[in-house]
Amino acid sequence: MATASSNRWAAEMFMRIPWVGLVALVLAWPTPVLAQLGRQLESGGVSWTPAVALRDVGTDSNVFGEPGDGRSDRVMTFTPSVQAKGTTRRLSLQGDGLLDFVYYERFVQERGIQRRGNGRVEFEFGRISPFVTGGYANARERQPDVDLRVRHRDRTVGAGVSTAISGNGTIEVALSNMKTRFAGGTQYQGVDLATALDRTTRNLNLGLRYRLTALTNLGLDASIVRDNYVYDPNKKTEDRRIFGSVIFAPDAVLKGRVLFGYHAVRVKFPFGVPYKGVLADVNVGYTFKESSRFNLRYLRDTNVSFDSPYNVQRQYGIDLVQDLLGPLKATAGASRQVTQHALSPLVNQKARLEHYDSYAVGLAFLWSTSIKSTLAYDVQEKRSSFPGENTRRKRLLASFSIVL
Image (cartoon, rainbow, N blue to C red; front, side, top):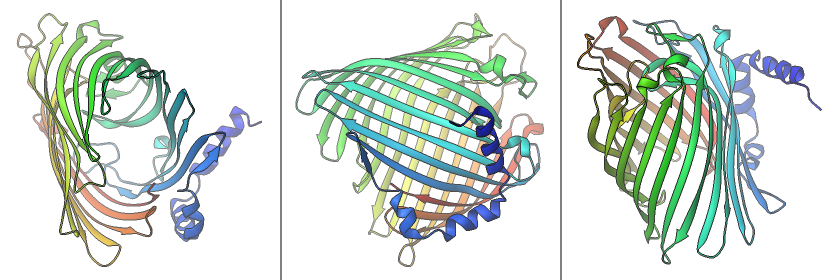
């Protein structure tokens, strides 16, 4: 049996592999062997679908999101993952998990392993199906308004019941509880992120699902989301929202989702500013003449913030894919995100407003229905109402993955 010390040794040895050598190893691996990883494996009534991906291999010009051009490094992430599904007469289960082996050539302190997993077990009793859910994440990644990779751990448990109301409709009630904890001692703009962002999130959701056609599903949801902060009770918020959604199948001519609604955020802080407004999440793609595809994105929502009870985010984006020769495709994309931090009108503090612009071009090659490689160049710029926080980031990245 492997010990903890032997596992750490194996992880350290993996991180010491030169990134160029690992890229050559995977790209030289015979395609038939790689294709086996995209096939389902059966074991004890459970279907397992393993996959591997070598992604984000290349250079990052501003690893730490510093003002100006910042410091660069060569980076790489190797990701094995698995999905599982199983069904019996009264029971169905599904789950997924992955590991990210993150490599930096110069900044060894940024290397690490990320873990994620989710699962759902559902019990079927005629029209009524109670279920339990769970999730876990131990990852180091950039937060919505923190341009810095921060280690955090999320643990989620939930339960609910789904009831069939017709041949095509169901009503679902679900309650979940998520604990989010950040690594202590990490500072951003003079704020300790663990003190500012450690929280417990409770979500009560009532949803109606209706299958309109084989390619279209409708939804109507009402939810109450409460964020209770561990070290700053005054940041406690309650978000009440109601929204409708339309989801199109991935193989439809028009694919993606459209979500619109309304929500109101209440803040416990005595002088905190409540929020009321539109909630939107649109991500829709369309295929034109079987050779050109474009995808439109729009998001308007609130999110947690390191220096205020919440921030308001608006995102706009477009992605284009054009067939060139055979399986070779050209890609391009552009997006803008505007983040406005909520502040108290009675506090003498300058409002924080940030713009994030991103532009990308690249190539994609489909080796088969399950194997894909990409090469992309992107530029990311941050412009803040505090000029000393403006940053610029350029990346040239390649990826090789099995598409399941």
